[in-house]
Image (cartoon, rainbow, N blue to C red; front, side, top):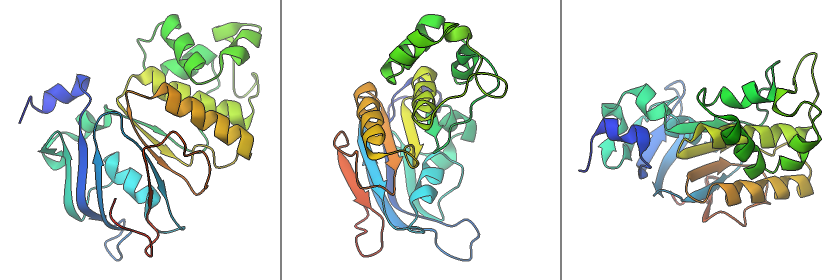
Length: 230
């Protein structure tokens, strides 16, 4: 095996899960046996009925939940042999309602990377499709958002979550229903920007929608009747 656990902190690891199952309580299986091969840059959309295990799969990949059975490896190393925080530092997670802090736009992005420069932040916003929005802000990166500050729309919030993931520099991005509450046109536009901005990163997106998948390499349905383990 090349490298070692410390090498992952700056690398772009190859993720594999093989026949992984998982349970939140131990009383039932919340993720059926699933196999995924995720080399660097692979984009996969996970769909399925409610309760089919979509969010549980993301929790396993993010190391918020350990598998009940099967194997999860990074470049051939079993994740159980790696420090949890070392794995999590590789992964940016974006949910359906990214939190907006009552602070400046700059601070809202730098929470993902405290050392990010204004150039880094501006680039991430541009890649997330927010360059026009940024230009229109009266105070630019110093604009205060959240409570007592400037309000943002659902689409802007979703793009802000994406920009935060981009500025983090993390090679793996997990998205849990990132456009769940948006109309079709807005969702399509955001997902197009997402896939365009993450060509060199591994992306796994959970979605209950049936649109916006044109930029993804694979679509996997976890609904039992369709589940083929990847």
